[in-house]
Image 1 (spheres, rainbow, N blue to C red):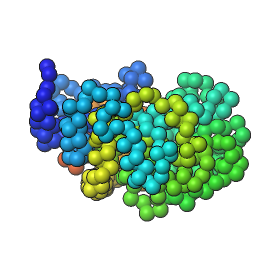
Image 2: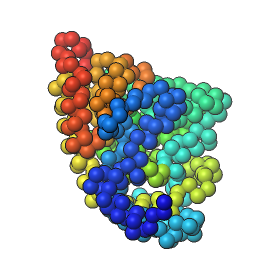
Image 3: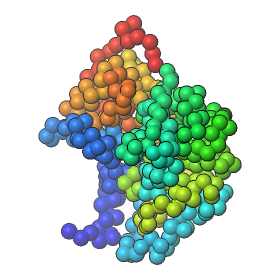
Image 4: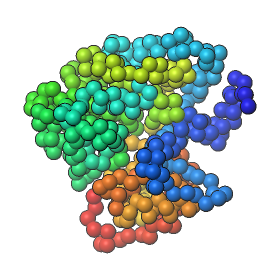
Length: 401
């Protein structure tokens, strides 16, 4: 069935009242979907017939893109038949817009189909069977999966007792001359914790002193959700330091996970290998228009951060009242000690229509990652959590982590 431009707009406008834009463009459940597929589909529980889902499993913005982005998408219908380089604006304009935002040059920016393309290009460019990879455990698995698939030597450094990246042990691991690439997820997914800019700067300085050839990727996918005053983006650090680059995405606060737009930023010589590996036409006509509109709509990001903070505080407190302590969340998700295997909570919640995150070894026997939906969704989800998580006293729960 064909849909006219006007018809599509009507679908979106009607959908915003029931958050259908989140389904179409925020691609709710996309991250979890691919992780489940890689696991052979074994982790995904099924909701009973007739039970509607609240999918809080993939860290998306539940409201989807802002109005400016949606208007930009609809406005590009006449150019849907054009390649991105022939559209107006084209990819070059998007690169210019990002460069202007950070006061850098276009040569410092490399676009990707989501930040996942940036991460994989980094693995291709800076690792090999003789150039190892250092990462955290648990953290976002994209780079780790690549390393295992292609025989890259890997050292996973377990997070510390506060669920933060273990900086000292990661520095020690990355200081070996055989290491070519380091992945530093800040805020870290799935633990939602963050390190301040002083710690990140020290991390980079000490690794480069010991191993100047190592390339460090600082993934800031959840940058817009951070409220910790010690935090600051590492973009300036990357621009002033060789062999460091930052990855960003429009998939989170901007609400465009389904549109696959990300980018790397760093010194020209550092990001050039990523540009050389870039997939042609990796950003769509619609994605270019929506991203430019979003970058010029700071109010949407400010409103989304404020909305998410209220939901985060509500959910963390509700779980704490059940005896489940969460790590200090600086994202749009929380990592909570549920005192039982995540699979048990996941299966029990699915029976009531609440879909939560997958396992994150080595903490899958005690902790679960819960993405944050709308306040209404989380109020319903909390009621479900309360029905399946019996209150645990401090005495019986052991030391808090």
